[in-house]
Length: 133
Image (cartoon, rainbow, N blue to C red; front, side):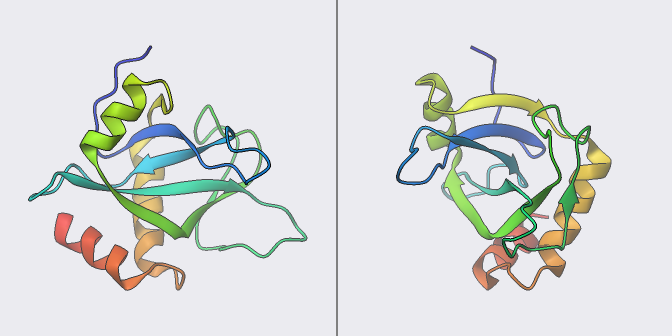
C-alpha cells in the first residue's frame, strides 16, 4: 500500500466503472487541499477520448502526462465532485482507492485553468474551487 496524503496535485484510482463493471477505476486528480469546515476536497476525473462519443474538449491529457494515462484522454469537468478528505483516506486504507502519485505542476495548472473555462463545470464546483485558491 502506498502512502497517501490528501493534498492538491495528488491522484487516485477511484472505483467509477459502469453498472456492468463496478470495479473499474478511473484516475482522479485532487484540485484543492482540504477545505474548512469539513475538510472537503475537489476532484476531477479523467476519461479516455473515443472519436464517436461526445466529450469535453477543454483540457486533453496525453500519454506521458501521467503514468496511468496511456491514450488520449480528457478531464471530465461535468463529473467533478467534492469529497471529504476523510473519505479518500478511508478508501485508500481499505484498498478501494489506489494512490498514483502527484501530477506535474504544469499539467496541473492546465487542468485548473480548464475547470474555470469549461462550460461543463457546475457553478457549485467553480465556486468551491475559487474559494479554495
